[in-house]
Image 1 (cartoon, helix red, strand yellow):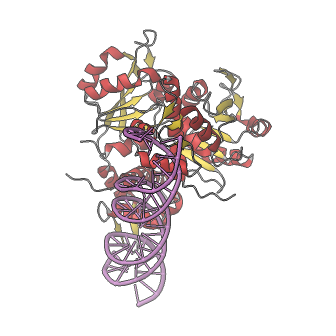
Image 2 (tube, chains in turn blue, red, orange, cyan):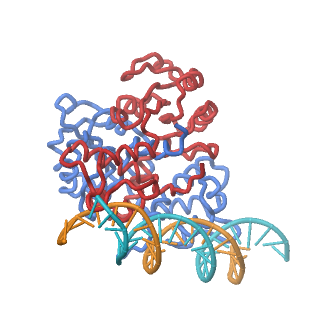
Image 3 (cartoon, chains in turn red, purple, yellow, brown):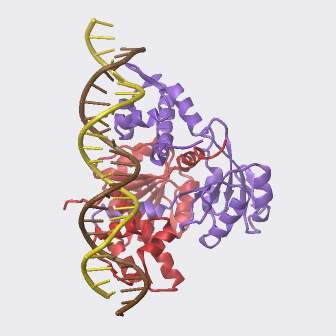
Length: 207
Length: 207
DNA sequence: TAGATTGTTAATCGATTAACAATC
DNA sequence: TAGATTGTTAATCGATTAACAATC
């Protein structure tokens, strides 16, 4: 099962998918074109056609792409036709926000558990969940076949929690902790650090 | 003041800076090398040297880079020697989490105000702030000379709020709203969408 | 001095774009 | 049919890497 498709192409598919979903919700038309999509996203039409051509032929000359069909195809490519169970680790302010976020639904993910180590938080209701003790992390994750976890813990325990998650089979991590994590080769990590994002912009601002 | 340096190089500087800060906190040595830094970040040493060479010569043959000096230099390059005032728009769960986040301090940013349109939230204490009415957005942002805003509002008002922020001089936006925003050319936008980040990883997972 | 590591060059590798035949 | 738009090719553009003289 070799994989030739560049990461950077994979990285754009969710953006295409999101825009297509938004076109669907607008409901003004059933078709779109690479030119139309590109204009909306600030991407060249050639790039969109090239990206999609890695996976097959989804359009028709003259009429472009059927929106619903393309949504379906990209969803399959990204393995989003089933829902993925997701664990949140850390029930601080951020874990709280994530547990209440309803943007996961219909986009391929379902939060199924929230962990914390603070006895004051354990057992408390948080959105639709009861905060579980981090002691139960291993058993819960294995029983629910969870492959994806969101890290919202303090920086000093991030690597240890990561190790424990990897140990029980988590293969994808979305980390909000501002530190580089060490994981085996077959585990994906995606980072979200608001400060890093803002620092990338200040370079261009007049001080 | 032409600008030849690739965005992708600018994008790595905050990562270097974060790792250097972490080396400083460890306090085990005063110097590092491109090889050492690269190993910690999973980046080639050649790339680190090349990136830095765009801005000057910060190292010494044989001994590498003085950590404190390189921190200082990168901070200057990224315009982080002063603190930037930042506004948060949206006092929902996410705005709440951001208002309480203490990771902005010492990394170049200071949250100075939080806005919401919900009368039940306006006037309430949130962390160190009192939630202000979004009606006051324009006057407050102009008076505090705010150039950076964080968007944590519902999707249907995101573009309208963006327009208002741009109108009063905001030049950099960190948006947590899962939609493409339209802004003038001189305004930078950085997006954070957990679902997009997770969808980029599911491609690589066994369904 | 000997070992280490920089900054830089040239080669390699990879991604984007322009252009167009094919065809709906 | 005429107009529009795809998928693909080749050309261009840009980023990464390997290698090494310079030198601390």
